[in-house]
Length: 198
Image (cartoon, rainbow, N blue to C red; front, top):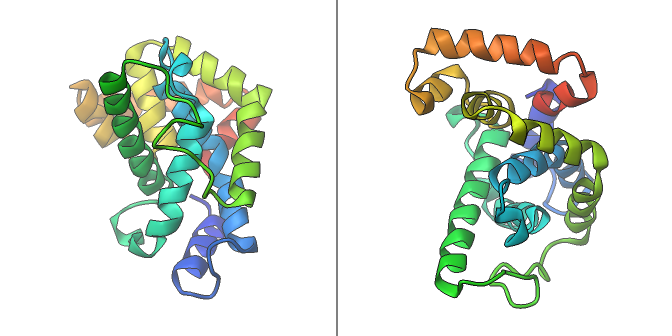
């Protein structure tokens, strides 16, 4: 997470800015591309036909805005906290799909987004329409499982190679080396590597 993004989060938490203002819009604009790629990666291989990634992203932001005062920077980066909320939203949506056995849509879903702030809706819809993000998510989905875990943990969730190692059942050193190699490979396209910078 860059210093500017940390400053934006600090300003929101200190009460210097209220959700819905310019700082919140900036925060949303800066983090939404990574959250969108994360959502697409989670919904790959058939789930995207049953749950729209932009709905997952918007619901995540709605909950994050309400829970923003509970964010504690000493417990980890903002993006990891936000994606943790996204993971909870995804699990609830998958449970709902299992119960309903049908496609969730915006009109009939418990995740209807009418209450989402207009600025957040605009930003998330722009990210959902981004062809660059769509292509990047498709490329990540085509990676082997260990590399997808590394991208999710180390790149998008900002959790580091230790968490990736735990999820993969390998050593932290092996995960760190593998992430370094993968990051170098992704770094050949700076606009994609920028997603990991926040």
